[in-house]
Structures are given as structure tokens and as C-alpha cells.
Length: 208
Image 1 (tube, rainbow, N blue to C red):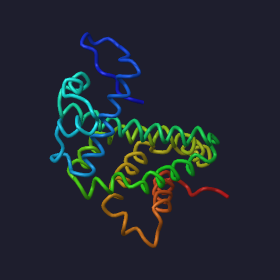
Image 2 (cartoon, one colour; image 1 turned 135 degrees about the vertical axis):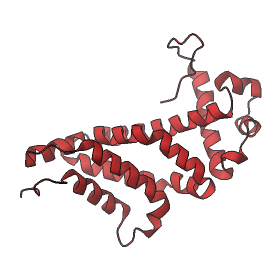
Image 3 (cartoon, rainbow, N blue to C red; image 1 turned 90 degrees about the horizontal axis):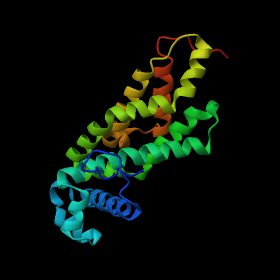
């Protein structure tokens, strides 16, 4: 899902497939360059040269570097959400929702995007995490909704869904710094323990 170019009159307007492809290529290239050189080491000219477009074309899509960075934040957010939605679509069984979410988070972590950014530009990674924090909390709450429902039916007690989503977001962000020290526990094991532990917080243990 790409972020459409905001029209001047404020109305919803589709920029067309070619413009969407160009915009997406700009965002993808900007992120790749930031991973390699850090945000401060990337300029509009660098992006134009890498994409193969003129500055005039660039400014048809973005007002400047700050606008590109905001687009990168949103693009990372949307791709992460779409990946999780696709994982759920492949296995929609609500009884397995916890497994699906943990597996997706584990696979995404192993792709190494956050770790690369942490090495190249930790400040950019921090700003990216902050920009997407609230949306991640809501995403985890929605994705784990069937699991929460099961626990509530089992225990007769409401789950603090916001608390669970909040701590998943915090913990997942910390993995970029401390993930290498997780052994002897695998990341997916730690994520599962965190989610289950918080979900059953202040509740009776699950009945056999």
C-alpha cells in the first residue's frame, strides 16, 4: 500500500499507476541509501541519481527531504502491517492466531532491517520507531484479538489488550539492541512468553 500524493485541493485523488510506482521507487531507494549511509549521508541528489530521475520529477512527488523521510516512515509501517495481514490471510484459523503473529514477528526480525539501521543510523531507527509506535500497538491488538477472545472465554476475565500491545511494541523495538543477547532463548520463544504472560496477567492460570 503506497501513500498517495496529497492533492492540492485536499480531495482524494489517485495519482495513477506510473506515479505510484515512481513514488514507491523513491521511498525504497531512500530507505536503501539510509541503511547504507545514514540519514545525514543522503541527499535529494543522491536519491535522484539512484532512481534515475530529475529533481523536477522528484519534487512532483515530495516537497523535500523531510517529506521523503515521513514517506519512508509511513511506507515501513504499511509494509509491516500488510505483511502481518498476509500471514493471517494464509492461516486465518483463529485458534492459531498467536502462532501466526509470533512467527511473523520472528521472520521479520530475522530479515534484519532494524538491526542494519541500528548499526548505520540509530537515531533514524529511533525516530522511525517513535513515528510508528502507536500504530504498532493498535496493529498487535487487532491481530491478536482472536487469541484475547479465547483467553477471556477461558478465564472469564477481560484482557488488558492495550497493555499487551504496548509491551510487545516496546520489547520488539528493544530486540534491535539486545537481540544478540537473547540466547539460550530464541526470539520467538521470548515473544510468546511475553504475550502469553501479559495476556494472563492478574488472571487465573489456563484450565486444562
